[in-house]
Length: 211
Image (cartoon, rainbow, N blue to C red; front, side):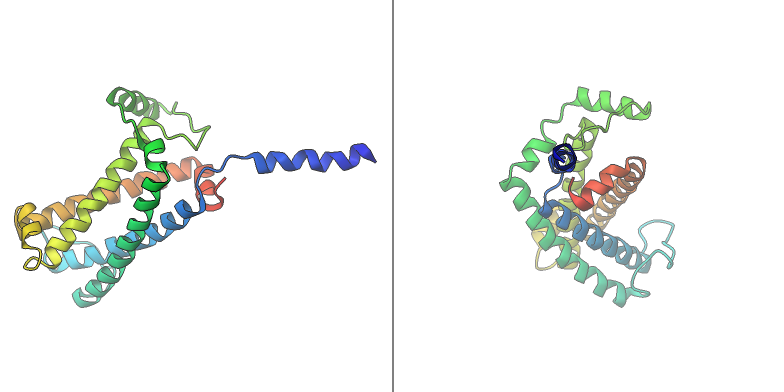
């Protein structure tokens, strides 16, 4: 009786002892941000199609809004969701010390080493609570791209009211190109992020359940 009763108890601590990789606020803001970004990107492509910067347009099948006015409504709605969620995420990331612990320092030599290891398929993912140098660079980079896309978006949306911001980006037309470049960087990050989540499925599970 004593041995049988002790067996389940010995198994319980193992499950509870699994380290918390992502606290609740990280998971909630991550998924809210994912939704907002999909809305922003899809509607942004529809807006782009109304006045293309380059010799191509995006297919209506992957754009959101059906037409310019509808896309603008989606874009502005998602913009507020993205900004508010981003402020919460950054504020908690700074206040909790998570950014400092997870993203820094970023050393070029370590980035090169881990990048080469990733290309060779030898980059370890045993401890999801520790970011490798490439992850640190990509996560810090996408935060910077997010800031740029918000600021350029404001300068395009309100070029008269925020003339100084529009001027900082080189004028209205140049701000559109910078906005597009930031969007492209974020889309590239999302693509790599999804591919890695499929390659290392436990990382996706950790973003859902935390452990």
